[in-house]
Image 1: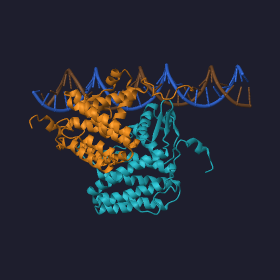
Image 2: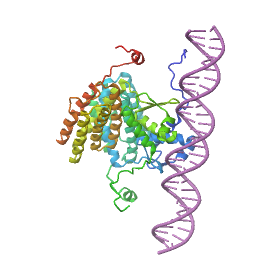
Image 3: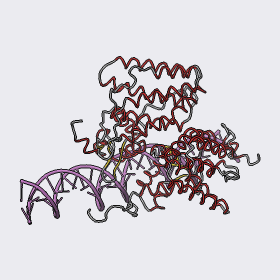
Image 4: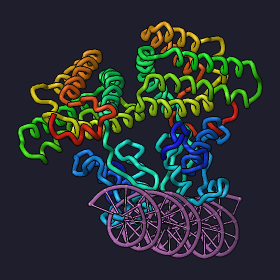
Length: 238
Length: 238
DNA sequence: GAAGGCCAAATTGCATACAATTTTGGCGTG
DNA sequence: CACGCCAAAATTGTATGCAATTTGGCCTTC
């Protein structure tokens, strides 16, 4: 332990396979390669990743805690299928939390952070110009990463974890209820927010974030299907 | 399913033993019957509750998600021992979230809710007059319950869960860093907040909540032991 | 006497076996 | 033909066994 043993990143080997499976499943859910409501059979997932059910269960429990998976006793785990009401709660939570995060971020943002934001913006604009469902998925992903970077800059690990959950659930909601699919069409919300951050104007960043969330949510179709979910789902007309 | 089967609380039978163990452990941690840093041996806990390690592991994993337990690979689970910096993050998060919850609660509070709040206040004042460590623990517990009731009234399940985590971690922090132990000495913050809610004045409730959090945090001794944690801990003078 | 290495005991990580529960498909009856 | 019941299959819940890792003590060596 004396020679050049520092500055090593955590070993690239796959230690903690439960976390790896959790991350793979989360990606698949957020990208909607796994449709909401899909049953996640323990044995099947285990075979897929070549691990025992024990490890799969740990991963599923983690995802259940994040709200991306719903487990029912003796029935199994299913990809979350948020109701419009739950979707509204996700965005209400974001409206409550993110402006504060933006203020905190504006207070302690560094030039290096700004550079990271710009790089992210560049990725986003590139994806916007591409076509196809893969690019669409990547776009939603990148858009979420922007918000996570913001929370990361704010420097509060607890709020960062809350935002990770909210962003993941938002992606699910957008995939489920999004009208156009691309929530940022016509706006440059992220760019404006970065400008406000660079100027150190936390209040403006917070305000821009609020309207940004408005933009996202206004692209959703959250008609209340209260109590008639099944019947309405079976009605192909309408 | 036709006769008086509604209005029943969840069956009193112990289905889902992992959740039961999790709740028991959480209570013990929040009440500080389990000191921070205590190792939670899987086999030992299993023997105590008469279940296998499998069930214990599920409970410990859940508590790790909540931040009340820290797990180290191949080393086991330990009761969380939050650093002053983590403690500050807990309260920063609460400052960010709770005022908004108060506004939401003020907007939709019912007379029935107000009655619940009053009952809670009554319990708190009773506990305040009692002496002994048991009453002190119950007081911290009751104080937390007030905040959870507030989040419950606000009607957002996601924010409620965030608050459950923050309140639990706050109790741990108060137990660790509290000076007087009783954070509400001399104030009647909770009562004032209920009054504001009853008057439907969300902004005032939010403001009162902020100052309430200030009161709680000002009772803590969060001297920055940055980098010198061990050395300082061994220095009995000072 | 102190430092360092090595071995045994304890503990966790994981896989697997078995029990309990739910789901499914078929059969018989109204 | 529809409905309900029952048994078999599938799936989850839990316990247990084994391998891998860590920990603590003992012994050797300087």
